[in-house]
Length: 589
Image (cartoon, rainbow, N blue to C red; front, side):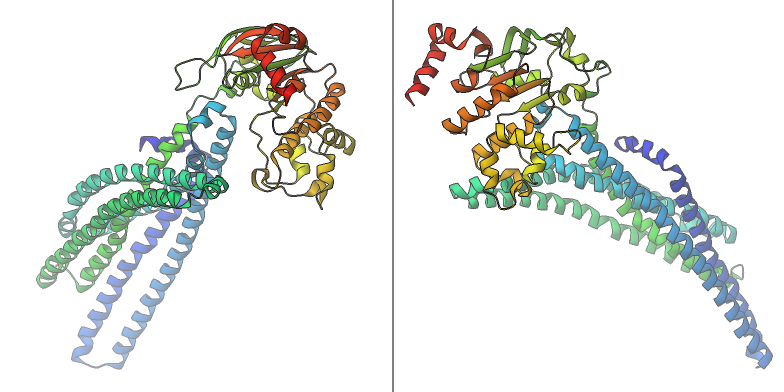
């Protein structure tokens, strides 16, 4: 249960609804417990009257029997209606609370996902993230709603019914309750087994969901290689593992309910035997015996539901543990040290900047020292894996650096509010991601106010050389581009991503190899348009292509995470072997 303590804050938040719901549970059981009493009184009254009638068929006595039966029948009907009203509001309060908590938890997880850094997403698959926000949260909802409701119902039923039974016959009540200790021991044993079973089932469900998500996301690659059968077999294998684990848990659950019914059946036999003996002695009436049997039947469902409730709690605990794992991850973006607003008046300083990806043994960036003056355009090139993109992501706070390694105007990046920093940076990553929306919405989505004027929008489109492409679509800017921009070519995706960055009011622009899929003529057109747009702006251009690098005031050459050379385009051609190789190969092309 300790994992579920996290939910106590939500129970406090909705304490009023919870209190009303629990009071309705109590009222429901009080009215339920009134029915056996009415049955006992009515039955004893009828039997007593019938006894006198048997000796003398007096019509007036016969009429009184019918009147008594009608009176007690009406009383039972009214009590049952009141019980139904309170049961309705019991569900309308406790189940509503569970839906509210479900809503809050999903929002909490979604917000947390938004805040977590790039390193988190390198370790966790999308399917697992989705499963925790859907399946796991739904399991927790079942604990907040049905589990608490039925558990409270069980406790109040026991309290009310046992109190009533003791009032009738304490000795017989003690005999009836003999099976309960055995019931408690069996519940403890089975619930322990269910806890372990639910945990491994949820883990396997995440693997299954992740497998399906990955398959659907890469379906075009799968079909192009003709390996559908391999992925079908993989999914079947994971599905079989999930089925087997679920069946093992089902076997444990299958033992629980027959055990409940066996123990309660034993109690019923005790009531009938011992109660019959008391009736023979005259210390117990037939009405008392009927009352006891009804009380016992009232306890059968709460006790039987205890197994189901226990399963819900165990499943919720396993799910909440998985949710807590993500919620409790330290979030760099909410650090208390982040008090400064972002501004860039002078320069960006990199001081002994080093960074190693989790799970790797060698650094991707090592002891980089450099200053970028405001208004300067800096080019970065180097072989594949030399750390170019990592350097850009560190500056853009996609990954988090250690203290005092990156500073803006002397302020450590770890002291700057992450939202303020990212709002001021326009970043075009190497891996372009587009949303399943219109061309226009994909260009405007990064703006705080997405209602950009047409001149600003058209200017960004013109610089990115997208104007002719958009004209080819029947709906123009209102064209839906499909999931991840499936209807666009690689070059169109890159240019749309450039337009999305250029429309933003940025302090720093980072272009990470964003023209690699563009032909040479379009590349020249974009570069010529960028010259005027980037005038006086601080820009970092990462590229293997020399054309965009020639916009730079200074070019850095990286190798194995270190700056091995820097200079202008002409200086590097003269003295740097790698840069000269790029010049010769691209000139030849």
